[in-house]
Image 1 (cartoon, rainbow, N blue to C red):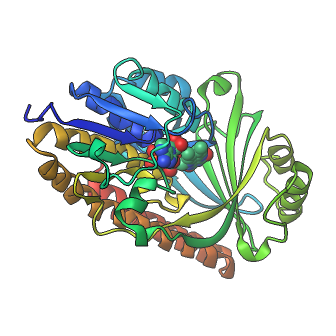
Image 2 (cartoon, rainbow, N blue to C red):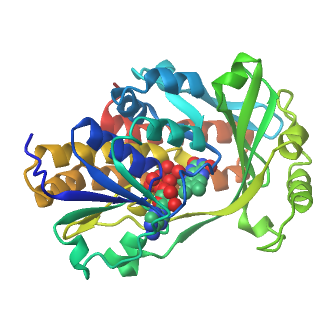
Length: 388
Ligand SMILES: Cc1cc2nc3c(=O)[nH]c(=O)nc-3n(C[C@H](O)[C@H](O)[C@H](O)COP(=O)(O)OP(=O)(O)OC[C@H]3O[C@@H](n4cnc5c(N)ncnc54)[C@H](O)[C@@H]3O)c2cc1C
């Protein structure tokens, strides 16, 4: 091991990326401190998809049994129109030739799981918001600061103050989670495209529900901003369900009761779909960014958490292998910046494609989805990481 152990690593943010980095460092015998603004580990969030490459990272941390007992091994992404007619189906995970599955899972459950293997091994400081300028305090000299503090990153603001602007995808995301009878085979992610540009993404994400012939369905309704008539604040549940049911009133899927999906969700949340322009550098001096802090992306490629997990493994191994922080950061940036920037841009392209599908007839839509979905896979996943 080349790592110089008298230098300390500080991670800002105990989200998926920060906690995975802490676990990776622990497995390599490297200590770190983690500062998290919330008083305890976040229980917030809806569902996430972890792509096979990142699942492999989590398996290497010894989490394979637990992951598979909590999440769902997603078999396929099925594209349909608003009446449920099949447009295209794409195999995923093991069914697509990977050694490991794609796993659909609750964000809170995943975070709790990764935290469980590292909580007693690294120094977590909950309720500690990092608000310093890391360059102007002696306390931080000689330390590596890793900004894993999410899309509104304080560390990024200190490093690159001109790069905080959010880029809008002109879409509002309405999210919910609903327990229902098993959705199809219990392992299929649905992407339904409406005539009006509205999309629905829905997938089961809980193994325990599946074992009871149910699905705990994570769903997102993507609504072009031009359709939004509700005020920005103070939307109550009644307004939200009314708005969404009206928007999907012409939809009919034999195998998914949309009314139940929307009205029986425990919570409904609305956010805007945003990303940021890819950066050419993720570091300055001994500060470096990871996960959403470095590269927030549109969620259309189901890649945000995946990339933060791969960032964490890459950075941990670079810190292990190189004798100084500077070389380790350079190696990490060399591997990760081109790969992830490509995904951010591919997600933008995919969003544009999805928005123009409404102008096509059914056959053209199927062709367009088949071509762009295959290209996305080639450009972003298989091309960069290899299938196995
Ligand atoms: C509450 C929450 C809910 C989410 N829900 C979903 C979801 O339902 N579906 C989905 O696909 N993605 C969700 N995401 C995003 C998803 O988790 C990330 O895209 C992905 O996992 C990358 O993770 P990350 O670790 O880079 O950032 P994040 O997961 O955003 O984690 C960043 C962490 O940094 C902490 N933090 C921020 N600022 C500071 C500071 N100044 N000092 C100390 N700590 C700080 C935050 O509290 C947070 O815990 C959610 C993120 C959060 C924070």
